[in-house]
Figure 1 (cartoon, rainbow, N blue to C red):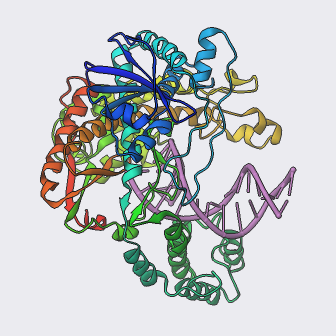
Figure 2 (cartoon, rainbow, N blue to C red):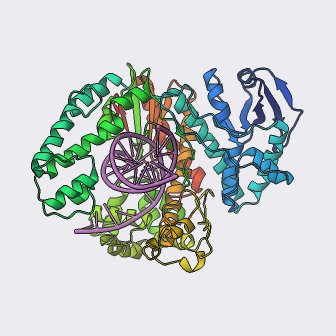
Figure 3 (cartoon, rainbow, N blue to C red):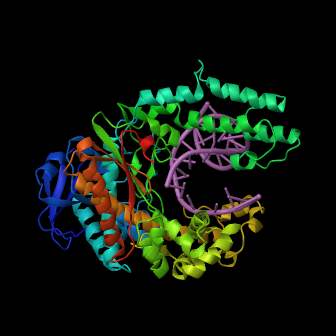
Length: 570
DNA sequence: AGTTTCGGCGCC
DNA sequence: AAAGGGCGCCGAAACT
């Protein structure tokens, strides 16, 4: 990702015009700011520019895409500001360009505007950013300062790679939002009818759900609403069975006639409310589902979608994701991404060796530490990454630690740092915010389980307010979070580079990236391009591995499937 | 009546 | 047998 070629900056103006300026290799202005009338034309007329510096990709790029203009690379100042503030341990501070300028000049620092929630069927993809615009000259001042702040980080080269990679991710996200995921509403409707039966007028439950609710009621001997947990718990209690909740894993093994229809009801109910007819109505237009991808939407760097539950498409619903006639979906899935990333960041010799092969990593681990029991090996590895604290996981963790000491020590150290409130970073330098307590008892709280202060009333809940992104006020929870953060976040670092590389290959083809979900990417392309895309994914994965982690024996294989329908992939 | 939280479950 | 990370979404319940 050498930033060799020409760099310009731009800032859209209120009246639809645009300010632009050339930048030198040092990131400082290399010429005067000039004004032009048309944003799209300003970019289109400068094909020699390989990186555009702007305040916000979400502000600029959808508009460029709407006029058919793409850019090679960009640098998103407000995204970089967020990453830099995080690295500096100042994540609580406003991250708009205007705020950055205020800090720089010792002037006022405006708070960040609140974000608006997604609305179904919104005309333009991505929410319109609400931060204040800045004149280009001011923006350039912030940009120059950010260049200096990159140099002050622990690993300037990695930090520069991180901001560049996430900016690339934002381009990918905007392009995915513009493209949309091919979606056959007719197939979806057929599927719903098959699973749920007819809809009744009035918007009530469809036939199959009503039947299952009747079966549940019959089994209990009275009217029970299976969609009301309190009602179900009460009904079980009356039948002499005590349950703490109606979670599936808790009721599945109960010996009662209501269990079977109840579990089936919950499964179908979920489809109905989350991916039923009204979802279809709200989120699918003109044969495309547009989940509004947002790169870097989470603390760990994973993406989120801003509507329609884009990252939670149930397996059964994937039947509706169908390529256009003559086109294919290349569905690619990183194999055992998290342990491979752990191998790369911890440099554990044993784990690097097994991760240096493309074959099933869990199988290899099991042969070394678990007498060939792959399931146990997988649980142990995931337990180490997620911070499992009880059950078989602990025993398995000990076995893992004996064989892969550096790997386990790496996540243990992250957990300890998290518990102690120290900063924890991904490989490229994305920073996990330390817990900040609004109260004053942060020190003695360390290591004490939550359950002790949990019951002490609303006042303590008030005092336990954390930086957004924290799952719990428990210091152990912070440890688990930090433990997971270094792996999940470093994996996110790598996937950004992967997407950037893949995007560059696809730029010369009809192929387009249409979906991305943590470790899985879908490219929609003409049938004739499919094999090229498959190869491009392999190459992009290896390139991303080298760029992210440097020289490493770790391989990053993908399982790919060329299909017409998403449901047929694996 | 409108807004926030909770319970449950989908995905990784 | 039981509980560990990240998310989003929906309706109902619990509030203001």
